Length: 363
Image (tube, rainbow, N blue to C red):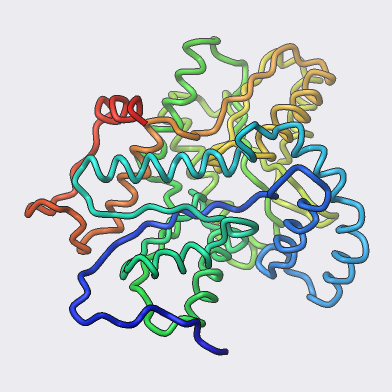
């Protein structure tokens, strides 16, 4: 494999640090052709679909990519914004806010965002960072809970880029932060603000993205990390075990996935006489198709049709100051020793909520 052409090496080049915030990806437009390109890349990843490759490619190109793009494009169109895909909009905002807040705390760190599938790609952002003289990169996935289908696939993309690079930057990787106190606090604050404005539900449903059940038996920690996040969040909210449920959404295909499934659970709750449910998606840090369409439209309709009276979707963390605070603290934990502070004192300082709110208002 030939190496990419690189800038000439400069002796004595000072270290330069960057954070690459990586999310899953999105089509460039809510059209069948754009969705087809996106799905072809996404569903061709062996981390995402773990069945014999030849058989899967026949199914993917012979059936799925002929049928699904038009249906998915209509769903994307229902949540598209004037600025583009919500996932891309929120991820870009998060990167900009994190960059600003690190700068306000006197850290020399470049922050960029990238998508695992579609644009802007991980490889293109690493090319740009290398051209800017970056020598150290912290790879920060937007997935709090580790899964080989998501987190490991981001790392695969970094490794694939590295195979074509001669002078590699130093890399660090954030595997997970499902139990990080700042992340849990941000989720709790988001929910509490909703309850203060709208009252409390009969049940809180915490819906995580599903994965095939076999991944649990093969050693993937995702299932356990989702339940730990849910337990810590319930504790932070002061909920009893009978006041919340953990479910899994976005099942694909006929194989058994992690249970219980979100929509059937909501239907059963409506049929059982539960009047109001609030649904939050703790594993998604940015609103996207799976939260705005699958939960706030499809799941809402299913619950109300089954007899439920009131359905509340609680938005993702998006650009909440508490979430940017969490990103800041998680980043500092992994930047230790890289000397990013401009001042002589290299002590990592916690950013307060008051500072976060004041700075967020300036962005």
